[in-house]
Image (cartoon, rainbow, N blue to C red; front, side):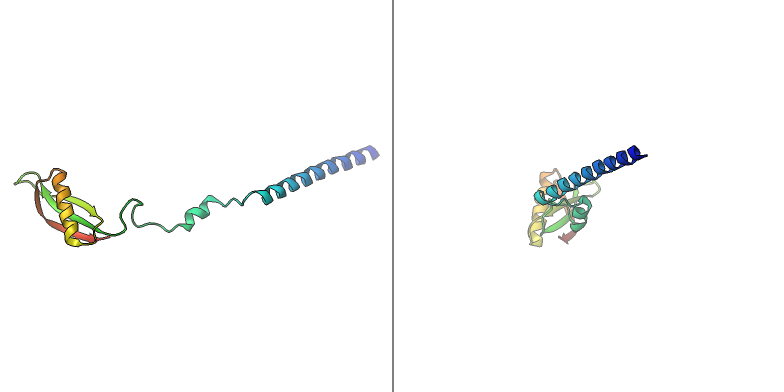
Length: 114
């Protein structure tokens, strides 16, 4: 019985020492390295964007009715301009539509401020 008790005490001392060494190592790491924050907290901290990251912060979105042939149905051509002038944004959209291969510009469907 005495051998079992002494063996138990030795085993407990080994486990306690191993635990204490591990706790000291953890404390050393905490002191030397910066804290690691969970990734979910970073994602929640950012506000959702209403626009994609590459879009301009100011300007207009112009929608034009365009055609490639005179008797064709209108198709919608959308252009995003960084200009704050509504007329300048419309002229930019018309130039972009012609460059994209739509020679006939019908009318402006919508001009939306960004």
